[in-house]
Length: 359
Image (cartoon, rainbow, N blue to C red; front, side, top):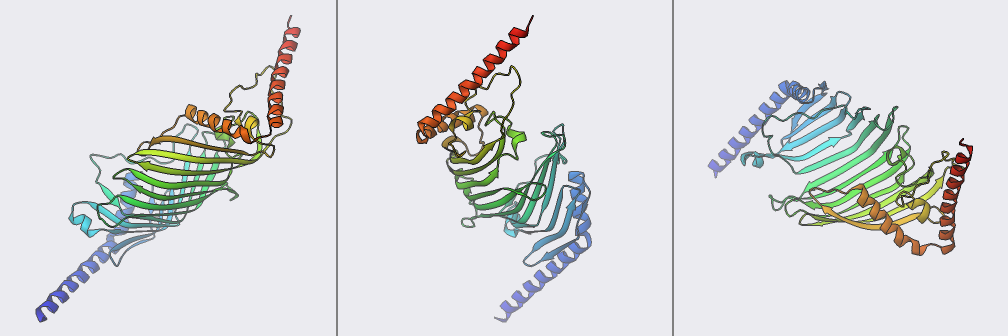
């Protein structure tokens, strides 16, 4: 009994000595080491306010700044000792508090940072959990607008946790949310993504939601893709159910545009032919009198390599919009067709006048 107590006390003393030694090393050399490694890999000046080691073996970095790219109030992580004994880099519970990320794209498409080039095979790093609290990410795009198109994700909160039993499981639950804002903090929409993903059998069950999305603000990106007329106002709600089994991903989406209004008395360029692209005219032809468009569509892809082409998107819009016609007043549809015909009559008159003026 006494021998057992002595062994226990000895082990505790050894653990305390090791912990105190590590804490001293971190306090003396950790700050410079972390700063130099960041600068070496990213090519940006890095500063940290402090670094510390706490129980149970949790490394914390405060007041991190990496050039103009990133700021974070605190970052902390716990290395998994069992993982190290198994020859793997396993990190438990990475927590990032109040990160601020600034990304800028130049007119030539170059970003304000470069990813480090890996020399040789990079070490395999396993993360068992991620928690982001009250983050913000700002994006300025000078490629789409010379003066820069700016948008930000605010109040970013992310919680990802891996199932602990069995230890080899790659099943992770996630819950993410953020708010879209413009440069003066005006709300542009809300984003939420929640569910689980299992990387081993490649299964997934999740729900993605985009609410009160201001479609007019993002006009520089979609142009006349959804309408040949200029929108004055409009909101978008998207609710998607994502279900995957053995890498086969099915996405069922409820798409609702509402509150659409247009710039009045738009003038067309003389001799310009009205668009015959039905996908682009989906708003004009299929919205109801209140400026609402509700579509439901599905598409299939791969979980590990999701992709969808513009032509496939157009086909889905047309197919879903055709189903939407049944709920509209027939007279409203006739009026819209008449308006479209009048556009072409106007085009014909323009061409006739042009040829009359020609010598």
